[in-house]
Length: 463
Image 1 (cartoon, rainbow, N blue to C red):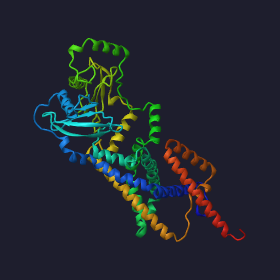
Image 2 (image 1 turned 180 degrees about the vertical axis):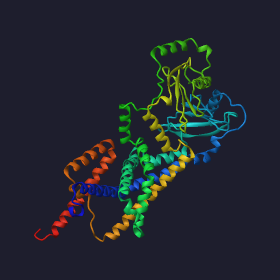
Image 3 (image 1 turned 45 degrees about the vertical axis):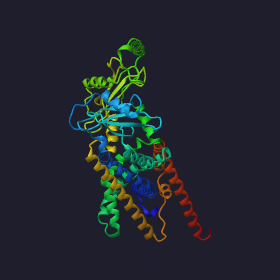
Image 4 (image 1 turned 135 degrees about the vertical axis):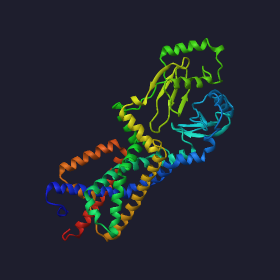
């Protein structure tokens, strides 16, 4: 085996490392690529879903163009009449522009985690334009919810999320590994024609798409169960968390609020079940927040969740420039008790916000969505070309055996082997799904190597 590599130790080690990288790249393509392919195909649908939603739910999202909008209190009352009960909304999203609807969102014990029942109100005529379930902090509509849940977990819940974490964990390795191989072999690849031209096209397309693939992987891991948890702990430990306002009132404010409640029963028109505030406070809270600089078109108003909680008014415009400022308001005086401005976020928190919004296709709107779809299509093509190359290699091998990872590793100098083991262990701890699958790769490869050695020994006379 050693005769295949140059005698110079440094060059020989370099060639062995490239051979190891090429074999690992092939393993990823053979065993992980099916999961990556499903992620890419569902990602194409997800990237285009905002435009599909705008068309499919146009009746619920659009309203009368001309006229004076009614107060938010009246719009909430219209939504409550739809429900048949005076339930306080969990959140209200005022119509962001003329011709759009106000979204009144209610908690419902019959819905799943992060889901709300949303009633869409024409802010001028108070007509009910839609009534459906929305999901997550971004309030995506049913079509995108289904695509999103399939993209993240094949509609199988937490168990299904392992598939997407496996794909995201290995995608950056495949992309950077392929880019490294392309940089080392690009001159030789230029001369490849005929049946070898497919390898050149695969390598070139992978190099062009590498940045987008790494971005997919990095941002996708933030949503994953195991690696995502480690990333969250790291961000918290290093002070990179995303700031958010606290709606918890100081104890003195709570005492004053309770005293205020006892003496204000006759002067306040409460909605049944709404707590010590009236529906008119939605309009008042929005007005105070606007005066405090919450000026994005897209905002969300959340009423106090209890006597010791404040109102929260937050910008939810994740396009460019990003507007996600938020304020907390005292439930009675509406004085600002806390605020968080995007301009004061740590750089890591800003980069995380932009990366996630870029992944979701909201940062730059339609151009962002088309770019995401283009990168995902490149990934689909790369996987298909990879399997075509593998099939051609199998047919051309005619029984010839390829080196295993174990053989290449054992040929490396022991300091290099120790370094590789350390890197593998660190990656396995940071990305547990990658670590577990890498261990599985190693076991399969080691068994294959042992079988090969026994067969070779059996053919040697005297054994």
